[in-house]
Length: 206
Ligand code: MN
Image (cartoon, rainbow, N blue to C red; front, top):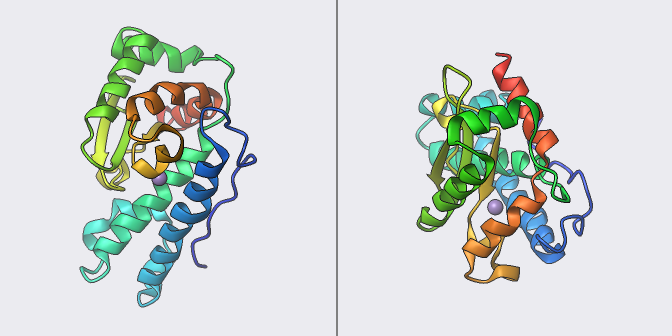
């Protein structure tokens, strides 16, 4: 079974005005779709590896044949990152995190505002294309912010992010042009905290 582009869980205009319709159409329908197409292409000659989940492929990148490893890294990473990204977005009308997630944020970063500042700072400092992720630390229930270049993901280090923001220019250039900081600031309006909480719960129960 080849990998498939997941359907968006909402319409392409659902995140307006923070993320515009044209960006969503291009980002999901072209960029993410291309990662899926190219991942499938890379795996055509290796049907044994094509049976694995994308998380599995990324966790075991070192075991994947060298001839297709870069393609799996870039396109598998792109597929996994974007699949998470659509899942954790929704216009939140100012609703923030609560419960155990908020407690973990407060414990790890001091406050929600401090967390947002550190996350945006990491996004701004990521030179060129990449992502900013929030990942549970191995022990103690705390969280940490990691930035990674290109389509790299903490999955490659055996760690599952609970949320992440895409700082590739294709994620914001149509509306925000070169103003990555404005995009990073506006993005907090479209974080689906229930979806992030669900990912957090899933990780902390392991
Ligand atoms: Mn992207």
